[in-house]
Amino acid sequence: MILYFTGTGNSRACAKWLSSALDDSCTDTFSFIRNGIAGEFTSQTPWVFVAPTYSWRLPRVFAEFLRASRLSGARDAYFVMTCGADIGAAARYNHALSAWLGLRCRGTLPVVMPENYIAMFSAPEREEALPILAAARPTLERAAACIRAGADFPEGRVSLLDRLKSGIVNDLFYRFQVKAGPFAVSNACISCGKCERDCPLGNIRLEQGRPVWGGRCTHCMACICGCPTSAIEYGKISRDKPRYQCPEDPFRD
Image (tube, rainbow, N blue to C red; front, top):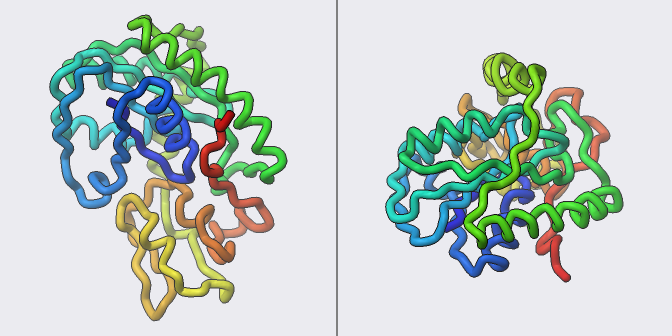
């Protein structure tokens, strides 16, 4: 069984491709996380967890969901993490999470996808994103081959810098960077409510037709990148930056 979490669609696209390649079921954890519901899942095939990389680790909301859920049946677990560049020492933490869940971790595979974290970086235009998506498919094919064969994902070398990024930098990221305060909306807002519906933590509500952010943001970028009129900004950092959402079926033959 494949369980995935996504903000702007990269991990959803990878999860659905793997689901098709492996002929396995695929479940979006959005409604569980948004509603604070622990999952109860049973699988006879290996667990495949697909998620983005937040500061060189699994998103905390996804890891917390897995810890709260009951996973029965298969005991092997694979992690597929989409990222803009690298995943640091995330594999080390995924091994620990697997042990906590009573699973045997078979490895973590990074899949480089178009950047979406415009609260800090720049996202590509569509024309720039397409070759990045095309280059990701061979990585997914290698992932599927390993899972079919019951083989471990290959392990990359982990440097001291990687351990620092996934350790202290991750802690600092959540403490100082992951805040909803800088989000603001312009007069381009059409009061469609898409940002409210797309927030995986239910952290956005409409007041007089305009979004207001609460204090439970996870910086998934679903609201700002999914706004149909680009009415949402993250302070001055996001101004004039492209908004990225993964196209439907980007790995189609």
